[in-house]
Amino acid sequence: MSCVRIGSDNVAGALMFMEERWKQNITTRPFQYEFLEDMIDNLYRSEGRLSRVVIYFTALSIFIACLGLFGLASFTAEQKTKEIGIRKVMGASVTGVVILLFKQFGKLILIANLIGWPLAYVFLRRWLANFHYRISIGIEVFVLSAATVLAIAFASIAFQSIRAALTDPAAAIRYE
Image (cartoon, rainbow, N blue to C red; front, side, top):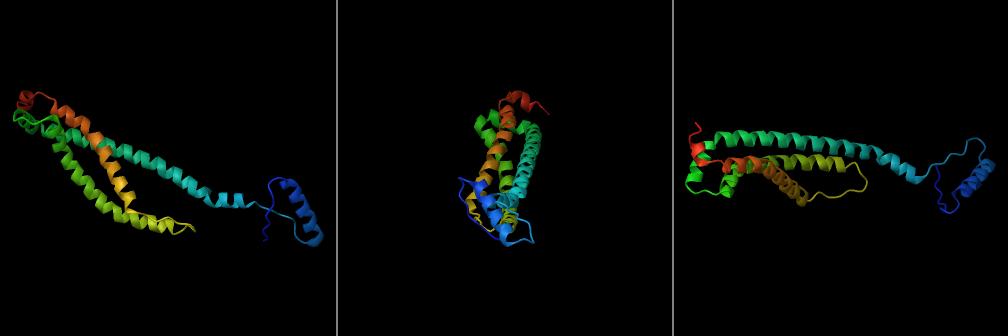
């Protein structure tokens, strides 16, 4: 295998010239060529496909997780209807009730992140070890992912929490 750099202004002419010289000097093998750009593209094409598959499944898993979190928030708000009603009678604000319900889920999300971070770090290090040029994985990636998860969780929980906090306290206390 030989490498030749040619100018981009007359690629066809350069290839014809090289083919003529090849045929003059080497008659046993046919002239074959491949561009470096194509070779590199072939190397990373599978990574591009993997990236698209990971993005689709990530979006699907986030959607399913949000549905589950929304259902769990609905269930928790339903179970705490009487407690929320008593807190409202005692002067709790809507924000206080939302924070009360989010605290439970926030702790669980942070624990899940602390468990998931080492696993993700090991997986990413092994995956990135297959590349010639690598990037390092910093803590900011994991902190940003935790912040994103907390924001998505808060958005999922906020609707149910606000709805529960805005109900009439008298009706909530008589609920059971």
